[in-house]
Image 1 (spheres, rainbow, N blue to C red):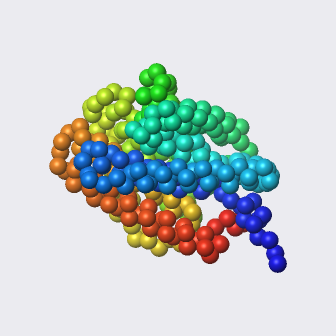
Image 2: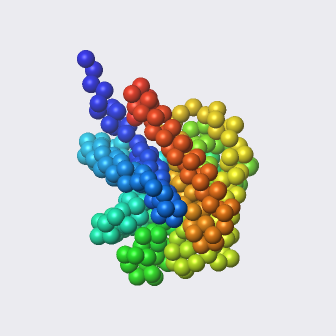
Image 3: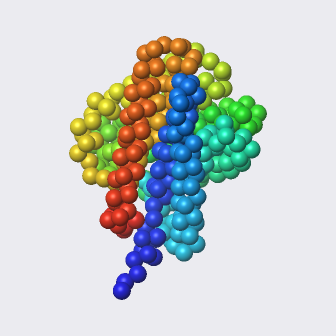
Length: 320
């Protein structure tokens, strides 16, 4: 009998942590909905437990992989596409800190400090790789490149409660500086160098996340919705509509773990819309928030089912 455990562990991708981002984002969305809309349900509590346990399980598996398959880890961290998914680990911690904040502020602070410190180190590491590379080509560019640097925009959402505001402004500035730069390069790549590979097409949804999360952080930092906040929110809303307009292309895609790129951005625009309703009182945002919460929940539930099927069929964690 052949033991397939070792090869599967060796091919265990860091992309798995995107599942924590999706479930963590949905947890935050449901909590904000329960809070703002005074919903008589407590779905966020169950989602928080699930997200936390999932992160612990994935961190344990990836830790074992790091001990037993260091060469595989090194290749992943040096790969021009895969390396940009490495910070999904630290972003998962930051999202869990946001989700835990209303439940246990002390635990939230521990998660935030750990996640923020790791994310800063990963940001510095990956930008250094970009600057001193010998292997990157324009074809390697895709929206996942937002993850390392633009992920810094998430920090202020819980950070404003855990540290001086200047620290949150520092991380917000990093993300906001790199977002338009990377957005320009991504559109140049897609328009003049062909469509993204099928496996990476779901990462198009990541285009929603920077302005949506930027809006949430900016509101946290400033305490209100001003003209710039409207620009950020409506930028995120436009990308959401643009991607829904292309639904027929996404419907044809074969399942990959990269499908989880649908999840967090949808949760982010949902939370942003709830916050817009909270600050403006407009019924337009209330109705839109309800629609987006429903879509996010159905999409992420479908992703959980499809991922479970793929795991059962052993079509994930295989050599690419």
